[in-house]
Image 1 (cartoon, rainbow, N blue to C red):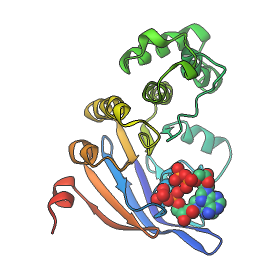
Image 2: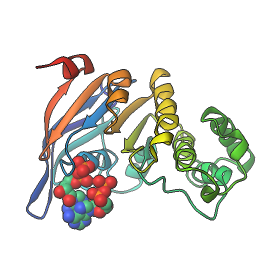
Image 3: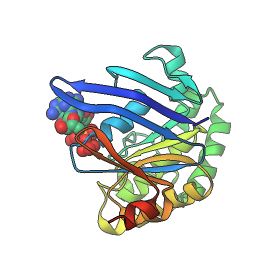
Length: 229
Ligand code: ADP
Ligand code: ADP
C-alpha cells in the first residue's frame, strides 16, 4: 500500500480549476519530482498533500488512512509529513538550535535536553554543527534551508514535501541543499519535490510527474521522461 495517495482530488480558486482529477500514489522510499510551468498547480498540489490547502472533492490517504479535513487527527497525521518551503520560514529571533528544537518540544512533547541533543545530531547531518548558536540572519540562504530541512527531520516524518526548495537561493548555494536532499533520498526517505532542478530529477527521482493547467499530464520514470521523443 502506498504511503501517500491522492484519489480524484479537485480544487478550485473561484473559477480557476487549480487541481483537476489528481490521482497520485507515492510509495514508501519513493522520490517523486513534480515539474511543470509556473501556475500549473505544483505548489497547490504539494500543500494539499498535508492539507495546508482544503480540497473541493476527492480523498487524501496517508498510510492507507484518509486525512480528515480538520481536527486533532489531522494535526497528528500532518506532523508525519514534513514540509520545506521556498522561503525557509525560520523564526528570526530564535537560534538555529532553538528553531530545530521548538516543534519537538511543543508538538512531540520531548524534553528540552532530549530535543536539543537530537537537533545537534541533525545539524551535524546537514553540515551545520558549528552554526547552532547563530541566528538565521547570520547564515547564508543555503545554510538556512539546510536548517529548515533539519527542523523537518526532527519530527521523524514518514515523508517530506519540498516546494521549490532551491528557487530562492543564489546559484552557488543550490548544490549544498540538493546534496542534502540526495542524501535523504539515498537513505530511503519518501519525498515529493517540486523543483526546476532537472539534474536532481534525473539522479534522485523514482518518478517524474509533469503538471499543466492543474492536471497531471505525465507520470513516468526519469529514464522514460528524459528519453521520450
Ligand atoms: P505553481 O506552483 O505550479 O506555480 P501554484 O499552485 O502556485 O502553481 O498556482 C496555481 C494557480 O493557482 C496559479 O494560477 C495561482 O495564481 C493560483 N493560486 C494559487 N494560490 C491561490 C490562492 N490562494 N487564491 C487564488 N488563486 C491562487
Ligand atoms: P508559490 O508559487 O511559491 O506558491 P506564489 O507567489 O504563487 O508562490 O504564491 C504565494 C502565496 O500567494 C500563496 O499562499 C498562494 O496561495 C497565494 N496566491 C498565489 N496566487 C494567488 C492569487 N491569484 N490570488 C490569491 N492568492 C494567490
